[in-house]
Image 1 (cartoon, each protein chain N blue to C red):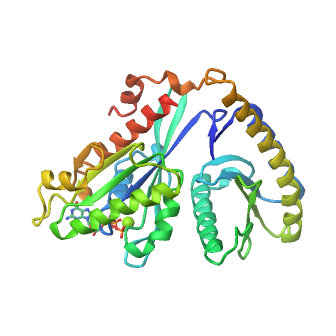
Image 2: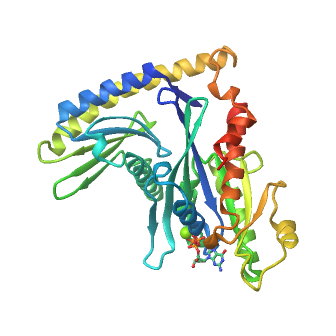
Image 3: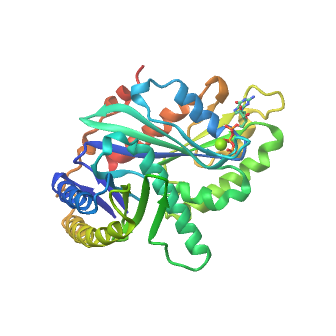
Length: 194
Length: 163
Ligand SMILES: Nc1nc2c(ncn2[C@@H]2O[C@H](COP(=O)(O)OP(=O)(O)OP(=O)(O)O)[C@@H](O)[C@H]2O)c(=O)[nH]1
Ligand SMILES: [Mg+2]
């Protein structure tokens, strides 16, 4: 059950960054945080281990401005990518309006990417959500590293429904905002249909 | 099902929250949905980062729900965090929302518990009414309560991202 607050004139959307461990999900949010004007963002919360691995989630609230008098607020979350955190990962997906999948372009991480997308589909289903119908963008991250697969190869294996894809180098910001905008737009278009 | 909060509903919820804050002598009280969105609040809400509070509380409740299921409980209906001066009482009200009460030595756990129980019944009535309205609207066809979002244009969306 979702509450929609017409009285406060707010549109609240939840975007979840999903993907294998060390793929760069947290780095995406850190870059967005660092490049957003203070008045447009809230505090970024990171529930992480001592070695900076996500333990439960990262959270970043963004205020993008108004549409038709409604403040549009995006709540960005990352999940913990490490396989054994599946229970927590599932919790974060609840109520997601859109998902960004951050894939690791490195050859040796391909199996992890594939496993993580399967896991995404399964966990969405448990919340009654269908990846086929959900706003979704696919990011090929770590394009700066030497041992990476070609974009064509990554797309062939990882694309789920011809979703928009973006090459990225998250620490430098390459592709980060394009990915976010893509999924945010899809969510607003969905909202209009409802 | 989506429950839509219009001015009337928000006012009704805020009234209950205000009474609860007063009767329990709490510093602040909040109603939050299970996805981490704040619905309404009362009391010293300005001194608190409510967005962070809502998201962490929802995460906390979700994790605790997970724990409950693991050991075969349906849910833990109350969470209580005791600090040196400030305490947080978190409860699920009417199975649909999360009620947060922040209080200090001017109140007590016993008092908060008592007042939360009473407020819970009032929230339940409000939610039931909202649900009935929502079901009526669904049965009566889509054009009954037009959403303002249906008028969003591509230009509106693009304008959000221009910079
Ligand atoms: N060279 C390079 N390093 C990156 C890139 N993106 C992220 N990293 C690095 O990869 C490491 C892991 O990044 P995180 O953002 O913490 O990964 P994560 O997906 O949040 O990992 P979990 O929290 O375990 O799920 C960090 O040291 C980042 O600096 C990239 O595009 N290129
Ligand atoms: Mg992380």
